[in-house]
Image (tube, one colour):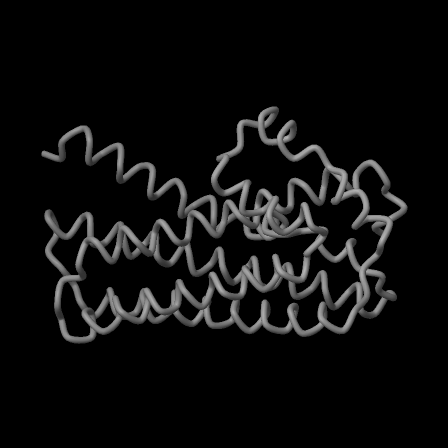
Length: 225
């Protein structure tokens, strides 16, 4: 009989997977959404930038849902045994989705480098009350400080670069897990902990940035069409 602790862990993981799989559109609006409003772009460029932001977030979250399923299979292997063929299918899919997220963030970075900022929105970021916002919403202070490090200087391009770097770091961790699974070796728990940590930190980093963008552009909706 499964003990209560494992039942809670299992239900939590399954719940997260369901949320990620069936709320793709709503979740794709979380990571760095409205960041395109900080650029002085025409309709075509604005659409492309928003597209890459949404595409990157969608593939990132699909990859995370794959990894949560992978963790579920590892957790339940104590009861059901380990199926390396199934694990390989899941980790390959997680890597494929993260590779697509990386491509989208690379395209976003390239487009942002060739597009001037919307200075009126940048000025709002420069004067934004980050400490008050963080305290009011109870956001993780360490991760929010990383967001503030970029947006407090109006460096939205740097924030996009950080998202690209984070996906690259996660891919490195995923490939290290893949090597073990390909060899029918039970994945090291420390590697699983670290990749889950990287996913969650990157997701919160992108979400906190989106919250700031929404707060700033929500007060001047004409700045973001």
